[in-house]
Image (cartoon, rainbow over all chains, first blue to last red; front, side, top):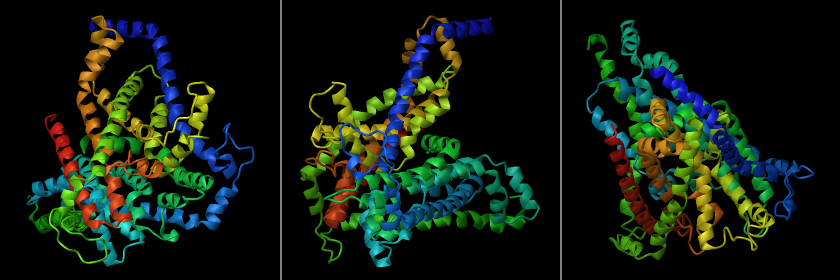
Length: 287
Length: 294
């Protein structure tokens, strides 16, 4: 009886809702065009001459593609080293943060130790301290430590990541205790246990967190713009803002620079989109 | 433990594993935030001597129109985009949650893309698009006859706030849609079928099944957006520099201007402390919401 009702319900809704489903499809397509459009405009403007940027009627696709915008960035504006800085910064901070968060998450998930509950509450509480509120004292500290205009100054504070610990703890919970016990009985040391069992078994967790941290660090702007000063130390976001000029802002170069900062990330995210989306949702909902 | 041989390692390993985090936390979060409290009680300008001046900075801050305006601006921007974002997010999520929809993966990604693309890059594109005289948006609106005079998107206080709100909506709609989509996926399909059998229309089941069951998720998105709106920095910084007439000034932008442009470190720290307290209150609220869910 129940089964027939279900089939019936599905049938009618199928035949009846052709109109509403095509309407829904059009709505989604329209929304997607609107969200993709600024990116299209970014790419199109990056290949324009400065004189073609603000014109009426607008130029959708420039008739001559001005690839020299990119050449100028790399040859005269040091975008080679700037891109490398972004890459180095994001990779290093992501890898180290993954190890630290993985270790701590594993400890909170799978060990019993004195003060565990209290320390974990402390981790959660630390989520409440916004980076922005610590900028002034950190800046003062950095002056003494000679970390101003130093890429390590960007990396260091972000290695302490409460969100990452929480995230990895969720994943480590799923490891069966028996597997670890068996390894211990076979004479495996605790650190080997982490390397040989936790790391390979939680690949998807590490990939998810890794891609989130990488994206975040690649696009990081406020703190790097406070401490990075000289062109050869800048990251892409900071360098884009630095191209601005009160008299004559070279928007064609800013657009080309934006393409340089957007494309690598687009490629990475398209490859790892499943991990990114799953990770962001998991992190938000459970964190 | 069953295997006493390992006791020693089992005892030390966890402390060793969590120590990097706590060391870094101490140096880069806890100590700075406490130091922030201290600086906020001084007249420090970043290089000279610090003189303790008590709560003068706070007295000045509470009398500072710009500070109250920054909170007011954030609230206005919040009201401009959050209801729209949740409404659209829920509609898009419902569409992506139905089994007849085609191209779900593509649409999900297309709407989510703005969230991970560099906000600096996107802000500059919006400057081009929203330029009053020759921006694409105004020329399209004019050519289809919707407006006669160009809209001063970034040059009048109200339009500037709307522009910031549009950009925030652009960046966060897809993300909130995904959160709501996970909420929807937890609702059993049987509920809808039962409602259909009982004669409920689609719109009715949307209001009587979908909305009540994702209420918690909507609330959660609202809290996240509250935190996000008060912390807004890059969008107003690049689009409008907080102007015109401070109409897009936000607490974090004010903190940045006072500290790293005007070098009033003491005064800026009093903003930082107030901002920290505000964020703490919102986060505690968020924890409350999630506590009674479990």
